[in-house]
View 1 (tube, rainbow, N blue to C red):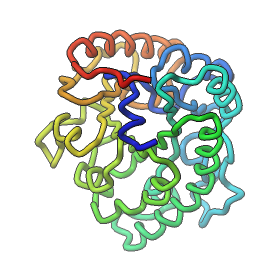
View 2: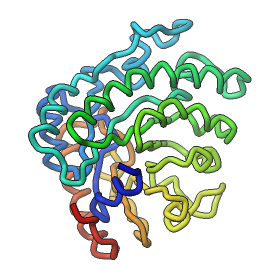
View 3: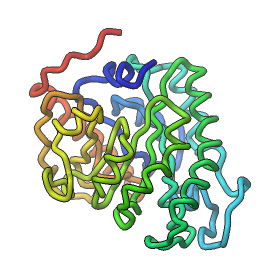
View 4: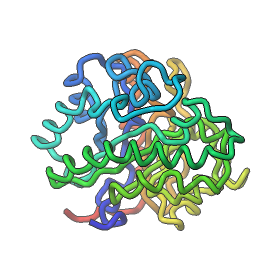
Length: 291
């Protein structure tokens, strides 16, 4: 299926999560995702998998070098997630998978932002990670579903050089749909150079027109579906203003993963996100593509 056709099957305003959830029980986490989110995703569970560096690099990311034995071949929730997707596949046929980005892994291994070998190290790490992610994509494809492979890059705000955009090519190649999530300040020239199908970002750090940041119409013109994070993860804060949907599809998420929040907070965020999406969908005249 072509990327545009797959994305056109999503609701006009859909909800999804960034990736990490605070559950300990993988089956409970998957049941929550299926119940609350329009675009289901395989939960990352820090209490089971470790943080985003430890999940891929093991317990000592500061150790020099890496090896295939250090990666986690499957997230803790993978089995329950596949079973749920087989039993109740989403009507639009898309699921979201997450992987720690190669630039963030390279920085986690100690590469400096001005290191001339940063891009080369990131490409090597991307190839290494892509071998595992390709297996995930194949298992999803066996269910007749399309995987949106979203690369989580919280550290690219301190890289920023558009010339390193090719570091994601090995991960882009494993699936028809490729996304980027940036929870900090977004280096828009670098992100736009990568041309992801979806870009996920904290809306409180997004100022259209500043530092090359496009508005939603500009993203849509490039074939990029925006996924603004409109709910702060920390409890007690008010929802952030939802950007005017414009004329293209829109994914709504929390501002970041909720793996360090409480289960109660995650449930409240998911419920609030559904309400906000329902309100926003009334302002967006884009039909859901027929099944």
